[in-house]
Image (cartoon, rainbow, N blue to C red; front, top):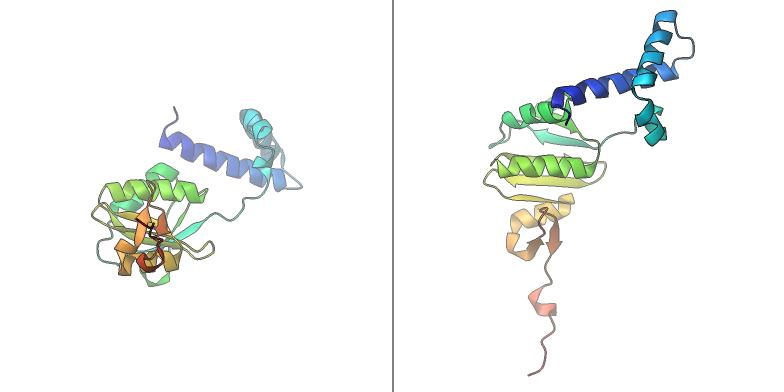
Amino acid sequence: MSTPEDKVKQNQEIARLRELHQTKNRTSDQENEYKRLLDAYRESILKNKRLLEEDKPQPQYQLDSKKKGFVAELLEDYKKETGKEPIAQPGGLVALHFDSQEDAVKFLQEQAKKNRGFDAYDKEKDHRMYSDGKGTFVHGTKVEVDAYLKNPKSFDLDKTGRLTAKEPESTKKVSPT
């Protein structure tokens, strides 16, 4: 099994391979480096033809690092697990990039299990994840999470913390007895 350090190195080398692949006129040294990396990742490229294509924008979750309950250990875990640096944003915000929304949910769900509080939002996908720092983890649209925070009893949570609004009592059908 690969270590987080191996994953970081692999991500860096693939990024470099992609960069060299897109370079039209490579120097002799660049050509040698390109061939070395191409040989090293040949199997990965055959399995995923789009590996050499430009990266698609990744989900970017904004977290407020000044918010009460936020812990810096979350950022340290992010660096260790993804091999990426959190990106400081204006106003005390920190941006975290994940390869997919599922990866983001998995990572932040684990952080919630460690009783770490956060409020993360990907504006582009309208996906918000929230933890109160006491083990509670929920995710959904911004409107859903806002509504949940106002009235948690009006929502059901699945095992991943996904919110589903409960049917209002007034609309439930009562079977005749």
